[in-house]
Amino acid sequence: MGHIIFLRHGQAKNNTERILAGRTEGVPLTDVGIKQAEHTAELLKHMNVSAIYSSPIQRAKHTAEIVGNHNSLDVTIDDRLIELDMGKFTGVPYDEIFTSHGNVFMKFYNGELEIAHNGVETFSEVKKRVLGIVDHVIEKHPDENVVLVTHMDPIKAMLSTIVDLSPTNLFELIIENASLNLFREKDRKFSLSGLNVMHPSRFDLR
Image 1 (cartoon, rainbow, N blue to C red):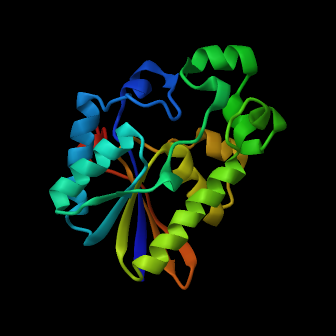
Image 2 (image 1 turned 180 degrees about the vertical axis):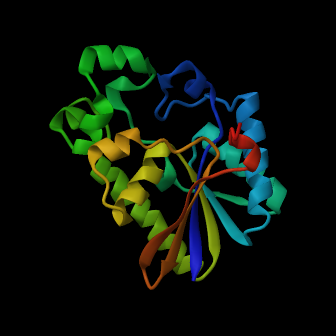
Image 3 (image 1 turned 45 degrees about the horizontal axis):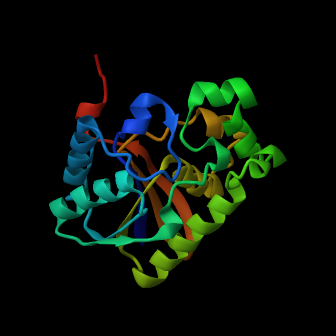
């Protein structure tokens, strides 16, 4: 019995600027994001990880490289872990999108036609490719713990395949930067072992 460990990239420049970066290249991790990735890499040292796969997008790839360096593992790039294609909304500030098109994220999780009409990848398409990489990992690394470094919505896509979440639940759920989201796999059946697992220093316990 192994774990598929989804890791969201560390804080990146687009996160602090509240811009929908989508697949835009050249969006680096912030200094905070690099430290987050380093802390998560330390956590993963205790999880007997055998392989790391990553989205090709810079902020995810850099996160994966930090984890790989701390755990003496190479990183395999896989396009199925890429950020969703935001179509015409790519590079646009969140507030501007909400003003002109309403809550596009709710529309995305609802599968409304307006999403596809604006060139945005649909949630069902994201689910399909994410399950594709998960199937690949299960076949290639049976009963092993494997890290998949990706973005928020691919992680939500995986979560929504095993937990019955409404579009509102999906919209309100925040997958934290550099958090671990663990799915236990046995005989192609999944259970959730951990959500937003982070270094203790990330939690405000005051």
